[in-house]
Image (cartoon, rainbow, N blue to C red):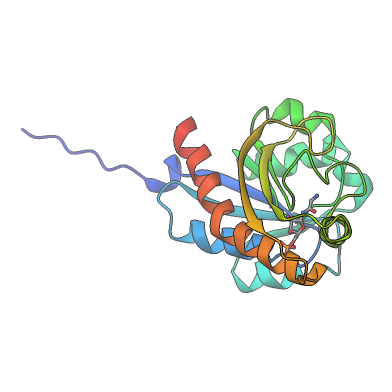
Length: 202
Ligand code: GAR
Protein backbone atom coordinates (compact mmCIF):
# COMPACT_ATOMS: atom_id res chain seq x y z
CA UNK A 1 0.00 0.00 0.00
CA UNK A 2 1.33 3.43 -0.94
CA UNK A 3 1.37 5.91 1.91
CA UNK A 4 1.16 9.57 0.98
CA UNK A 5 1.91 12.36 3.39
CA UNK A 6 0.52 15.82 3.10
CA UNK A 7 2.94 18.61 3.91
CA UNK A 8 1.33 21.57 5.60
CA UNK A 9 2.92 24.65 4.01
CA UNK A 10 2.12 26.85 6.98
CA UNK A 11 4.45 24.68 9.13
CA UNK A 12 7.51 24.88 6.87
CA UNK A 13 7.17 28.50 5.78
CA UNK A 14 9.61 30.84 7.50
CA UNK A 15 8.08 33.84 9.19
CA UNK A 16 9.40 37.34 8.65
CA UNK A 17 8.92 40.47 10.79
CA UNK A 18 9.69 43.79 9.11
CA UNK A 19 10.76 46.76 11.24
CA UNK A 20 10.09 50.13 9.56
CA UNK A 21 9.85 53.73 10.80
CA UNK A 22 8.57 55.79 7.89
CA UNK A 23 7.25 55.61 4.37
CA UNK A 24 7.46 51.84 4.07
CA UNK A 25 7.82 51.45 0.31
CA UNK A 26 10.41 48.69 0.81
CA UNK A 27 8.18 47.07 3.39
CA UNK A 28 5.28 47.00 0.91
CA UNK A 29 7.52 45.58 -1.82
CA UNK A 30 8.77 42.80 0.48
CA UNK A 31 5.28 41.89 1.72
CA UNK A 32 4.08 41.62 -1.90
CA UNK A 33 7.08 39.53 -2.93
CA UNK A 34 6.58 36.98 -0.15
CA UNK A 35 2.81 36.80 -0.58
CA UNK A 36 3.68 34.76 -3.69
CA UNK A 37 6.63 32.85 -2.21
CA UNK A 38 6.78 29.19 -1.19
CA UNK A 39 9.48 29.79 1.43
CA UNK A 40 8.29 32.62 3.67
CA UNK A 41 5.58 35.11 4.59
CA UNK A 42 5.72 38.51 6.25
CA UNK A 43 3.55 37.95 9.33
CA UNK A 44 4.32 41.11 11.31
CA UNK A 45 5.31 44.73 10.77
CA UNK A 46 6.77 46.61 13.75
CA UNK A 47 6.99 50.39 13.77
CA UNK A 48 8.06 52.86 16.44
CA UNK A 49 6.28 55.72 14.67
CA UNK A 50 2.50 56.02 15.16
CA UNK A 51 2.18 58.36 12.15
CA UNK A 52 4.32 56.33 9.75
CA UNK A 53 2.87 55.71 6.30
CA UNK A 54 3.98 52.08 6.62
CA UNK A 55 0.98 51.50 8.94
CA UNK A 56 -1.50 52.20 6.12
CA UNK A 57 0.50 50.05 3.71
CA UNK A 58 0.57 47.06 6.09
CA UNK A 59 -3.16 47.37 6.78
CA UNK A 60 -3.93 47.53 3.07
CA UNK A 61 -1.92 44.35 2.58
CA UNK A 62 -3.65 42.59 5.49
CA UNK A 63 -0.46 42.25 7.51
CA UNK A 64 -0.45 42.53 11.29
CA UNK A 65 1.20 45.67 12.58
CA UNK A 66 2.46 46.53 16.07
CA UNK A 67 3.19 50.10 17.03
CA UNK A 68 5.89 49.87 19.68
CA UNK A 69 7.19 53.12 21.26
CA UNK A 70 10.94 53.74 21.23
CA UNK A 71 11.44 52.81 24.91
CA UNK A 72 9.61 49.52 24.46
CA UNK A 73 11.73 48.56 21.42
CA UNK A 74 14.67 48.34 23.82
CA UNK A 75 12.68 46.35 26.40
CA UNK A 76 13.25 42.62 26.05
CA UNK A 77 10.16 41.78 28.14
CA UNK A 78 8.03 43.46 25.46
CA UNK A 79 9.87 42.62 22.25
CA UNK A 80 10.77 38.96 22.77
CA UNK A 81 7.21 37.80 23.59
CA UNK A 82 5.88 39.81 20.63
CA UNK A 83 8.28 38.11 18.22
CA UNK A 84 7.96 34.66 19.82
CA UNK A 85 4.19 34.76 19.71
CA UNK A 86 4.44 35.12 15.94
CA UNK A 87 7.23 32.49 15.69
CA UNK A 88 9.48 34.94 13.84
CA UNK A 89 12.48 33.39 12.08
CA UNK A 90 13.95 36.48 10.42
CA UNK A 91 13.84 40.21 11.21
CA UNK A 92 14.12 42.51 8.20
CA UNK A 93 14.87 46.21 8.72
CA UNK A 94 13.44 48.43 6.01
CA UNK A 95 13.95 52.09 6.84
CA UNK A 96 14.03 51.38 10.58
CA UNK A 97 15.66 54.35 12.27
CA UNK A 98 16.32 53.07 15.81
CA UNK A 99 19.32 51.24 17.20
CA UNK A 100 18.77 47.47 17.45
CA UNK A 101 19.24 46.46 21.10
CA UNK A 102 21.78 43.72 21.83
CA UNK A 103 19.18 41.31 23.30
CA UNK A 104 17.63 41.12 19.82
CA UNK A 105 20.99 40.45 18.18
CA UNK A 106 21.70 37.73 20.79
CA UNK A 107 18.31 36.10 20.29
CA UNK A 108 18.34 36.33 16.49
CA UNK A 109 21.98 35.66 15.57
CA UNK A 110 22.55 36.15 11.82
CA UNK A 111 18.81 36.56 11.51
CA UNK A 112 18.51 40.36 11.42
CA UNK A 113 19.08 41.95 8.02
CA UNK A 114 19.29 45.64 7.12
CA UNK A 115 19.39 47.64 3.92
CA UNK A 116 21.45 50.82 3.78
CA UNK A 117 21.14 53.33 0.92
CA UNK A 118 24.87 53.66 0.13
CA UNK A 119 27.88 51.57 -0.74
CA UNK A 120 29.10 50.89 2.79
CA UNK A 121 31.51 51.60 4.41
CA UNK A 122 30.94 54.92 2.65
CA UNK A 123 28.18 57.11 4.12
CA UNK A 124 27.34 54.80 7.02
CA UNK A 125 27.17 55.25 10.78
CA UNK A 126 25.07 57.24 13.20
CA UNK A 127 23.14 60.10 11.56
CA UNK A 128 23.63 58.69 8.06
CA UNK A 129 20.19 57.59 6.92
CA UNK A 130 17.64 58.34 4.20
CA UNK A 131 18.08 61.70 2.45
CA UNK A 132 21.13 62.59 4.59
CA UNK A 133 23.03 59.89 2.72
CA UNK A 134 21.98 61.08 -0.75
CA UNK A 135 22.74 64.73 0.11
CA UNK A 136 26.25 63.74 1.25
CA UNK A 137 26.80 61.69 -1.93
CA UNK A 138 25.77 64.72 -3.99
CA UNK A 139 27.93 67.10 -1.99
CA UNK A 140 31.00 64.92 -2.49
CA UNK A 141 30.44 64.65 -6.26
CA UNK A 142 30.45 60.86 -6.13
CA UNK A 143 30.29 59.12 -9.51
CA UNK A 144 28.31 56.21 -8.11
CA UNK A 145 26.10 55.26 -5.21
CA UNK A 146 24.13 52.16 -4.38
CA UNK A 147 22.78 49.85 -1.71
CA UNK A 148 24.25 47.52 0.89
CA UNK A 149 22.36 44.59 2.37
CA UNK A 150 24.02 43.36 5.56
CA UNK A 151 23.52 41.43 8.77
CA UNK A 152 23.04 43.62 11.83
CA UNK A 153 25.53 43.63 14.69
CA UNK A 154 26.13 45.96 17.62
CA UNK A 155 27.63 48.76 15.51
CA UNK A 156 25.65 50.99 13.16
CA UNK A 157 26.05 49.78 9.54
CA UNK A 158 29.09 47.61 10.34
CA UNK A 159 27.63 44.08 10.17
CA UNK A 160 28.75 41.46 7.65
CA UNK A 161 27.92 42.52 4.10
CA UNK A 162 25.67 40.14 2.16
CA UNK A 163 25.31 42.03 -1.14
CA UNK A 164 25.96 45.42 -2.74
CA UNK A 165 24.60 46.94 -5.94
CA UNK A 166 25.68 50.21 -7.52
CA UNK A 167 24.18 52.83 -9.81
CA UNK A 168 25.96 55.66 -11.66
CA UNK A 169 25.47 59.20 -10.37
CA UNK A 170 25.80 62.10 -12.80
CA UNK A 171 26.82 65.64 -11.77
CA UNK A 172 23.33 66.81 -12.81
CA UNK A 173 21.50 64.43 -10.45
CA UNK A 174 19.81 66.10 -7.48
CA UNK A 175 19.81 64.33 -4.11
CA UNK A 176 16.17 63.37 -4.83
CA UNK A 177 17.16 61.83 -8.16
CA UNK A 178 19.94 59.86 -6.47
CA UNK A 179 17.39 58.66 -3.91
CA UNK A 180 15.13 57.51 -6.73
CA UNK A 181 17.93 55.53 -8.39
CA UNK A 182 18.82 53.94 -5.07
CA UNK A 183 15.20 53.05 -4.32
CA UNK A 184 14.96 51.29 -7.67
CA UNK A 185 17.92 49.11 -6.68
CA UNK A 186 16.30 48.40 -3.32
CA UNK A 187 13.03 47.28 -4.89
CA UNK A 188 14.86 45.13 -7.45
CA UNK A 189 17.18 43.32 -5.05
CA UNK A 190 16.12 43.37 -1.37
CA UNK A 191 13.30 40.78 -1.56
CA UNK A 192 15.33 38.31 -3.61
CA UNK A 193 18.36 38.59 -1.32
CA UNK A 194 16.11 37.94 1.71
CA UNK A 195 14.69 34.92 -0.09
CA UNK A 196 18.21 33.67 -0.88
CA UNK A 197 19.20 33.93 2.81
CA UNK A 198 16.12 31.92 3.79
CA UNK A 199 16.71 29.24 1.14
CA UNK A 200 20.37 28.85 2.09
CA UNK A 201 19.50 28.46 5.78
CA UNK A 202 16.75 25.90 5.21
C1 GAR B 1 15.46 53.29 2.29
O1 GAR B 1 16.15 53.96 1.26
C2 GAR B 1 16.45 52.58 3.19
O2 GAR B 1 17.59 52.12 2.52
C3 GAR B 1 16.81 53.68 4.15
O3 GAR B 1 15.61 54.36 4.40
C4 GAR B 1 14.80 54.30 3.22
C5 GAR B 1 13.40 53.87 3.64
O4 GAR B 1 12.51 54.00 2.56
N1 GAR B 1 17.39 53.14 5.34
C6 GAR B 1 18.34 53.78 6.03
O5 GAR B 1 18.76 54.88 5.74
C7 GAR B 1 18.85 53.02 7.25
N2 GAR B 1 20.09 53.55 7.72
P1 GAR B 1 11.07 53.32 2.63
O6 GAR B 1 10.50 53.67 4.02
O7 GAR B 1 10.28 53.92 1.54
O8 GAR B 1 11.27 51.84 2.48
